[in-house]
Amino acid sequence: MSFYKDTVYPLLVERFGNPPPIQALRREIVPLARGTVLELGAGSGANFPFYDASRVNRLYALEPNAGMRRRAEGGQRGTSLDVQFLSLPGERIPLGDASVDTVVSTFTPCTITAVQEAMRGVARVLKPGGALLFLENSAAADVRVRRWQRWWEPFHRRVFAGLVLTRDIPLLIAGAGLRPQRVEHVYLSRFPKSWSHCCYGLAIKPEPT
Image 1 (cartoon, rainbow, N blue to C red):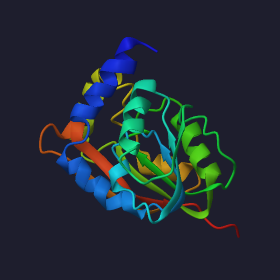
Image 2: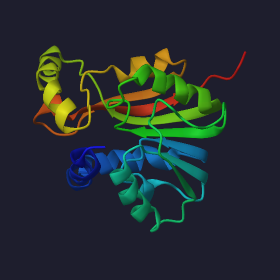
Image 3: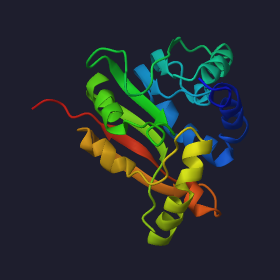
């Protein structure tokens, strides 16, 4: 792993990747996690303070970046969560079929190269009736904003570890066989809208029929 990815990028994310608008959305969705939880792309552990430890039996924190994991491990020690760190990327979830009750994903599918494979993995490890809680950068409905998203995308890919601004996250979730129950679209800041458009919500793995 390069010095930038292992050292500089984790520092950028920790310093600038969790402003108050994002914290407010984390506070809204992360406490809904329950049971055995997989966090896809745990990063520096920014979600850890928002889990309801009384509802979470075990948290699997999947994060391939060693620099991010070091920061997350430090943050985990300040919680009562039972965390097991997994070092594989999001395309290779090392858990059994139907083994988790909740998957939490914040700003992860927008950075994974093989995102469809990763979403199929999420659907595989979720128990029937289990939930995916998500907060992601995504393509804006506004054509003008989406045009700027495409213009900025090469910069974001290079600086923010492959970040893609124009993925239709709800469509990717549905394509993996999960059923979105709630999808909200929001701009985290007024400017630049092309950088700050996100979607968040809840999707369920259907019960077998």
